[in-house]
Length: 329
Picture 1: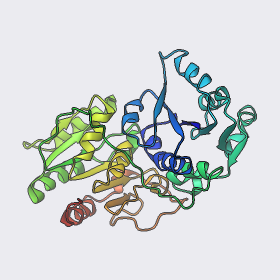
Picture 2: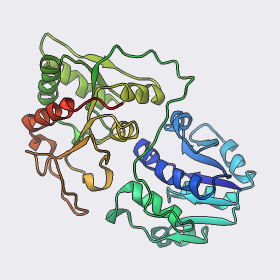
Picture 3: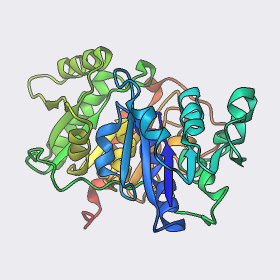
Picture 4: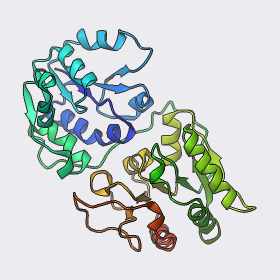
């Protein structure tokens, strides 16, 4: 059996699709599963279990990925994306079973592509559950394990950072998710003085992220943290996996840390953590809507507020609590 899975969104969506890919493997353990991704997330293909092949879409790739889809001889296609590109790929797959979400039916042309449907609504469930529901529409996936899973390739030659270190990732594609530079600087100083950790700030290529990190560095005073600009996504994943603790705003690093079960603190402001929160037992989630303590209840309709409302003291207390736990083995 040959299965094509399509996840043509960003890092977080790709990582949160891994529970669904695991469910596909369990339902059809003999199947060859190929995963279609965008070029920006393609380096993670080597770290995703349960997948035997990859198809990379993006600018400059011409007809090649579409030819791979057209000639793949697919028995089933699962479209986790639901946009025009993924609908066209699903159509080209000519798979006997073509599975999409019910909400795609709002688009009359796209609705003609699929012959099996999941009623799941992303606004009502965690994103990982939403993707798992797509598999459950045609396979008995059961309750399913929602924890994402990645495995670094053995051939990765990224030089390891001296341990132990804390990884702080303050940037994201949306500047309204940024926490104040002074508060990141205070947190970094606490990690150094109270816990004896090297502090590494990681940063993506976006100019707004780099400007934000420069502001944090200026706020740090004479003792500066280490700054890393991983050129490859797999290098960032390696940096995350080796950290003693990861603290980030709502961005793809949240899901990388979750996939490796690294102790982590995820900071949310304008976005609702209900849909994107990490769910392993060493993950702490803050929302600026309730800034003085970690969240213990998550609601689908929770409103966001500016990140400046998030308390530095509360984040530091949560950091101390996480680092007091025995190190995971």
